[in-house]
Each structure stands twice: as C-alpha cells, then as structure tokens.
Length: 274
Length: 316
Image 1: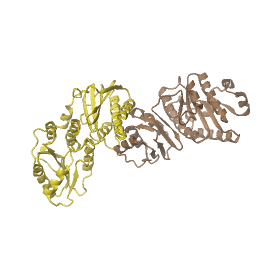
Image 2 (image 1 turned 45 degrees about the vertical axis):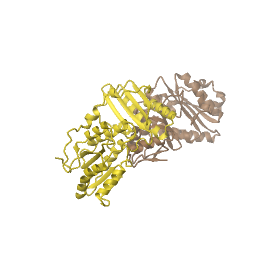
Image 3 (image 1 turned 180 degrees about the horizontal axis):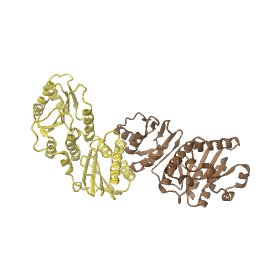
Image 4 (image 1 turned 60 degrees about the vertical axis):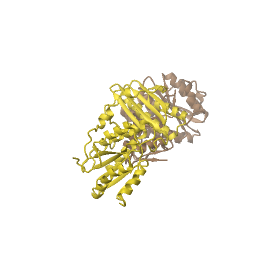
C-alpha cells in the first residue's frame, strides 16, 4: 500500500492530516494504521488505535509499541465504545469527545493526537445514519484542520457500497490509495473548500455534503480551487441558501462568476464575494 | 387586420437607400408619438442620424441606440428584449420598437444566427403588447439571408394596418428544418470521442490554449462545451463525438451524439423561469456562443457552435 506513505510525504499538496484509508481486510488496515501512527509517534502525538477488536498484537510493527502502551502514548479503543452506533451517534458529541482527548494529551505533554480508526461499521447504517456520519466528517474535518490532530478513517472496501465510499472520499483531503473523485469538500479554516469540478453528475454528491452543514450559521464556501462549477451546482446553492443557512461563496474564478451572472441569481441568502 | 394593442406585432421592411428606410419607418414613428407610446429606435448609427433628422426635435420621447452598441449578440439581445418588455412602463404605455440586427462582417453562420433570432422573437415576445418594426438593408445582405429575414416576420411594412406576410414561415418550422446531414464536419477538422463533460472541457481548454485564444473566450467555449456534452449524456447518448476546426473568423465546434435527440427546435431560446432546474443549459450555451445551431432527429443530434474573433461581429 505505497500510497499510505503520502501521509508522511512532504510533497503532498494541501492537507494530509485527515485521510480515508480504503482497505481490504483487517491486516491491510493495520498496515496503514501502523504507518500513520508511526508518523504521529515521530511528531510527538498521543496515538489512538480504534477498531472492533483492539489487541496490542495487531500493532507489533509499530516501533516501540509496548513502551507506548505502557506510558500512555498509545491507547487502544473499541470502535463501538468510541463512536457508539446507529441512532446513538451524535456528531457534535463525538467531536467533543476528541476535543477532550486532545486537551488531555496536550496536558500530558504530547504535541497532539493521532487517531487511526476503522470506521467501517459506522458507515454501514441506513441513509439517515450515513447522513449523520457525513455531518460528523464535516465537523471533525474542521476540528482537525484547526488543531494538532490527525485522523485516519478506515473503510473496508468489501463492506461498504462504492457510492458511499466515493462520498466519503470527497470529504477527506487525502485518500489512500488515491480515489478519483470529481471534487473534494474539506475544511479550510472556517470555510468549506470545494476543490475540483462539479458538473451535473457530481451535483448529488455536492448536495449531500452541503445538506449536512450546520444550520443557524453562515456556510462559507471557498471556491478558489474550484476548476469548474456547472450552472446546476450554482442552482443547488441557490436552492439551499436560506435564512437559517445563508451561503457565502468566496474566491470564485471568472467562469463561475460568468455563469452566476447569466443565471441572474437573486437569492438574498446566497452571496458571492472576492 | 392586426390587433396592435394586445399582442406582439413583428413586421419587416426592406430598404435599399436611406430615403427608402425613412419613408417606411417615419409613419410608424410618427404614429407612435401621436399615440404617446414608449418608442425605442435601435438601428445602425447612420440610420439613427437619418431618422433623427427626418422626425425633427422630439426631445427624449424616442430612445435612440446604435444596434452595434446595444447588445450586439443575437442570443443576448433576445434575452435583453425579453427583459425589456417584461417591465412595461408603469403608465400603461405600449412599446414601439424599430430594430435592425447587428449584422456581422464574419461568416454566414453568424448571419444565420440573426435570422434565427428574428424567427424566435415571435415566440419569445408572444403575448406582449409590443409593435416591432425590423429594417433590413437589401443592398448589403446576401439574398438568402434577406429572404429568411423577411420570411421570419408575420407582417410587412410600417402602416397602421400592415398586410400579413404571405411568405411567413413560423419559427418551429424554420428551425426544425435543420437536419444533421446539413452539418457535415469539414475535412481537416480534429475529432475525438469523449465520455464525460470533464473530458470535453479539458479537450477544449487544451486546443484553444494552443491556439493562443484569450482566456475569456476559452472560458465561454468550455462552458458551452460542458453544457452540450452534459445534455448528450442526459439524452442517453452512447457515443459523443467532438469535432473542432478553425474558421476564417474564429473557430467552430460540433458535438454529435446518438442520444434521444431534441424534439423541440426552440429549446433553450428562453431562460427557464424562476427556480426551474432544467432547461438552462442550452440557454446558457446560446448566450455565450456567437452562432449556435441544433439539428436533430431521433438517434442523431448535431449541435454546432461558432465563436468569432473579437471584431468579427463588426458592421456589415
């Protein structure tokens, strides 16, 4: 799985602190997790390994695993305990849990937190559960981008529908191995940065990502890396922006502005800024 | 007999000299002023001068514009006229409009686009209380262009009760007559099969970049191309072929597909209303392309658009 090394490769453009690892069987997840956690170890993070069946033997390949376990530098957790499941999963609560863990790690002298988790079980629920998970990915990505935290979200490709796997890739700045998605929607400060191209056929995916954005606050979309947004994508924004969730699109290129003008969008809750 | 005060009246006059133009247009203008209607004259600058001189000082009762300055692009002017008549004067006056196309010096395709503009106006402004007189310079326009121009107007002349045009051809028939066979790709054109809008956008960007086309022009072309290939895919095309070639005044691009086809020859001429999601792609394409023609039958659709170099849409 050579692409997993991207996590430690300084040549990676953009953020590499939040990755989706698509794996085929538990052993493959562990290979990726060890590489990821080793990178965390080297930069002084507290490490968290979170799977259904966490036993130390699975991390034999991690340098100094025993010492890390005994010193508290490595913690093991069961996915079901860490995330709950189904309708008990609360995205905001989950972020709060990680915030507490980060605070604790920093108090204990670590430089941050690296979490490698097999999230396959969390993305196998019904559409409602999946929407909650998508909301979680959105808020945890923003949390990761703003804090000394790195996250590896493992997805067993044999157990998750391909369309869901692609949707998840869109919400991660990095995927291992690389997944060809038309665009990505990831945190950039308080904004959601859309990078890539959104044409008609990618609009449903954009709609799913945006629909889980928090209400009662302005959604800032950074379009500076958006190579193309078709008119349907702009109409989608137009349809989603309202008093409860105004949308401000910033950094759009001339092509997006051209279409925007042609459409004559006049929704007061949708604005275009530099 | 025309019901001038309830529906769109679209009439044509042909002239060979400025005197002939004035002779036919002046009664129309005088009558409009007598009836205290809103009057706009949008013709070539030399005709603005001649008509101004003929009618004398009428102050601001007539709005005068040069056709080469006021939205000199068929698709965009169609929309501008639609917008104009959608906000009638609050005092209840009707619009009387004297117009002349911004005929280009470029290739026939650009002239054809103005012919289509005139034909589609009958649909775009249907039901509006507008009386529009369109003037055509018979000495400057090619015979075929002039013939189509006259045929696209249901009424002739500037009189109060203009005679019906016996040679009138409705827009759906005029535009529906295009057949894919008519749009053969010229020898020497580059051709590629694409499977996604993204591929088509990339193809256009690369080609036009190599040609040194200005960025804004590339953007417009990429947008048109993306809309067309998206439509092809929506129409269940299995094979989408893009051809492109340079023309004497710019470049042409054609998209062929084997999808379901476009049954409505007037599709995309009017902007979809309100928050309607579908029906905008073709409209956007028509707003951006300088010439845009659709030829379709079930299982075979060809859409060709042309982009002129800056300046090619100059004065004919």
